[in-house]
Length: 402
Image 1 (cartoon, rainbow, N blue to C red):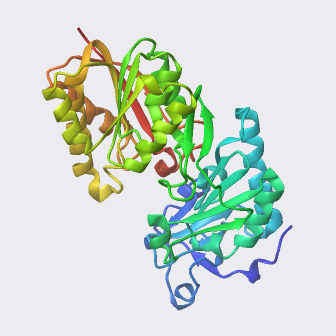
Image 2: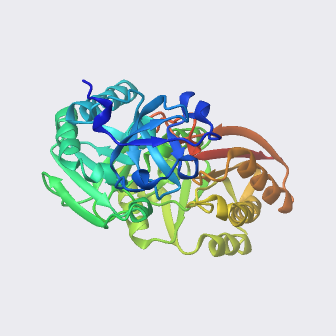
């Protein structure tokens, strides 16, 4: 279905802008690369606009935010596409079909923003309940169509809108958490994953309630866990610790600053009949690592999965120092021949820089590492090859030599 090009305003690239970058797949046009004349500046944020190169050749149809760093996000390479419920439903149905091939149970990231061709939209599935984060103004204005498409494509009975992200604030959108259809779960939702059970609080938990992105990295850690003593730092609702117990770990200690998250972790351990091998410790991760070292604690497997220490390029140096410090504090807790696994969800900390920071920290601790694993987010978090943001998660595991 197409519409006349004249039905959309036009944004044009400057002559020196790199149009090839967009033709070759990049979905964003930077604000600094656009000709921002009076007409362009009059395009409302979130409005559809045709992007043209300097020779007036159309590059596609997208969402304009001309006053922002990203001046336009491409939605469709067809400049005459109609972005309506039919278009939205096709993208959502494609996302559902992919997850249906990947997973036997309905617990996964259903829509991963640009990775699924829907910029700014995050949807996680918890059985019959969906949690949606619409982080861009163009989504807010099409909420009814998105809700209808999600209901039709999944058959889910509940949809929660979680509008509390930093991205929404950047778009000038209000913070809101509400039920869009169905009802809010009366208790945390049990989520089976890697043999463990995680309790997801989709109404009051962090982000959507659970981090599905670490599923494959949990599975790798679990392979190392039989009869092991495991330390899971920044554990959230049990993360690596519960997966390790499900694989036969002798004991797991979960450390997190959030008491509610640790309560959910304990409930997950109890639900899987693993509570007798599970313990929690609330507190600052850095201070707790130092305290464990003073206590002489040692573990066969130590995993540190901190929040984004480098959420932007401006924070990259401070973030890398924090990752280095975590590695330095964690390495002494690893028994001889044990494994240290370190993670980063900072898109600005690209893998080589993150890995180098980890190695500096391990070296400063006087340990000798061997890299045995590099992991990323699972396939329900498809990465747009041109966007580092959609490939934000990294995990590296080192065997520390005897």
